[in-house]
Image (tube, rainbow, N blue to C red; front, top):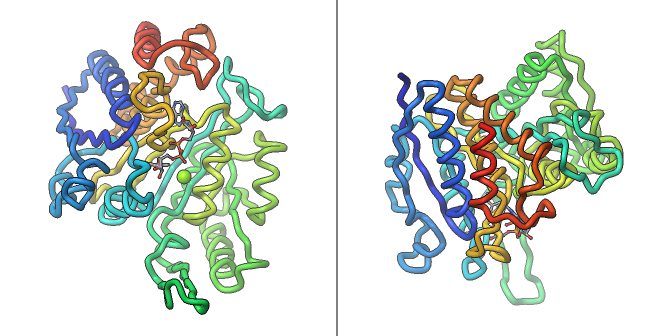
Length: 352
Ligand code: NAI
Ligand code: MG
């Protein structure tokens, strides 16, 4: 019997609606594979708490999570709290504090899900976006000057370090080697004349250190177009924080619904807990109605199983997800059905 201590951070909006299904799936698959999960739920870490107490989480929040094996997060964000406040108050401190420098977003087109993209057929599109998760364009370096005056200005600096870029590239090349695939690097060295040529040089350097892995680079604008035109071309796509953020949402849309895409924030050295979450946000437009698609959160739970050393259990979950989409028309409204989150989860559990 293996035991794992899991921190649950449901957050805001549909976050608390999609985490219980993920937990049901974990418990069901855990029973079969001899894994027991002990959960601690941090229900209060949210925009609601921010409104009440001025902070998304307590000051010692990271210390409370530190000894967990993994963190499963729902979503954060509420229309009453500026998005940069909620993001920088919870998600980003966890990602940076726990050195979760890889943001991994696998994208598959499942049989039974209609992609809005004509060329995206089930079984053909199977790619992973590896996004740098702790530096790059999402930095606090810079500032605002002369607010409200005609000379007002804002400066936002991107920060790329040799160590930070190298480690995420090594992860991407290692992943491509394990998948028997290849690496595509997203760049923009024609427009961003300092950071992106540096990124490109490091890509060439790390490629040389992984001689068996084919690789290429593409400018982000052309790459975005090709994601729509020929998504099946891609395998492992490595990108900076901003480029990876945009590409992975685009890829999730190509797969048919942002509600089904999972993400992992990994500390590959395992010095700190890693965090698993759906790609989607708190979806205030549908929150409270019990119709959120739980598959993003369930996919995140599968990524967590994989990271915790249970690939067979993870595969059971992704197989059940594929099966429920391929064989049943019980599905949530974002996929054209009329099932509630609970009904859809029950159906999935019968296939697990
Ligand atoms: P969103 O992902 O919350 O919603 C975009 C659209 O997709 C909405 O129409 C929503 O109803 C739909 N959608 C999303 N997840 C769904 C699901 N599971 N089932 C069915 N439909 C789903 O993105 P949006 O609207 O840009 O942001 C809303 C809030 O979420 C903002 O406060 C934003 O900052 C936050 N956010 C948080 C993230 C996180 O916690 N990691 C990621 C993205 C946004
Ligand atoms: Mg995003």
